[in-house]
Length: 246
Picture 1 (cartoon, helix red, strand yellow):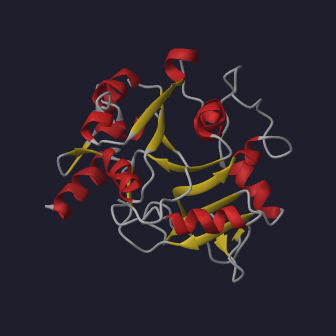
Picture 2 (tube, helix red, strand yellow):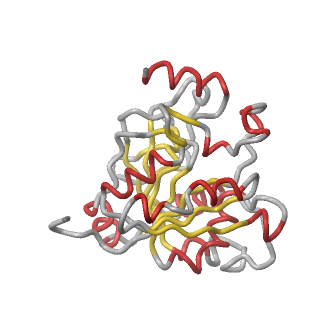
C-alpha cells in the first residue's frame, strides 16, 4: 500500500492513430497492441502508471478500436484497483480527432488535471510520481511536459528548455517532446483552444499549436528525461526495439 497516495489524477492514453508508417503491421492490428517483449505496447505505460499509484486511465480509440477495448476489457480484473474507460472516436465520428481534439472529447472523463501519454511510445523507466503532480498542482502552469534528447528521426527537436524550467517555443537548442505530460483542463478552453469542451462536433485538432501558444505566454514548464525512450513509429524501429530487449 502506498504511504502517500498521489492526488487522484487520471491519465489519457492516446491510442486512436491509424499507424500508417507501421503498415502492413497495422492493417489488421492497432499500433498500441503491437507486441514489445511479449506485451502490447500500450500496456507498458499502463503498468508504469499503476506503479506510481495512478489507477484510472482513459483510452481514446479510432482505427480498429474494438480490438483495444476487447484486449483490455478485463484490465481491472488483471490489476485489482485499476480502472479503464474509453473514448471511441471512430465509433462516434468515423475518424480520429488528433491529439487536442481527442483530449477535448474525453474531458468529461478526465476532470481538471490529468496525465497525457501516447500508447505507441516505449519509456519503461519513466516514473509517474505524486511529487510531479504535487509540483504541478502548486504551479500556475497549463502544462508540464517531459522532453527527451533528439532521436535520429527528429534531429531538430520540438521545443526548447529554459534555465527557469519553462518550455520554449523558440530556442537555439531544442529537444523532442516525449508525449508525456501533465495538463490542466483550462488549456483546452478559450483562448488556447477553439474546440468546444467535450468536442461534440468532432473537430480534429493537433496539440502542438495549443502548446506553442501557451509557451509564448510562459505557461508551460518542462524537464528533460534521459531514460530509455523510443517512438515506435516504423516496423524497423519495432524490430530493433525487440532485438535490443532480447
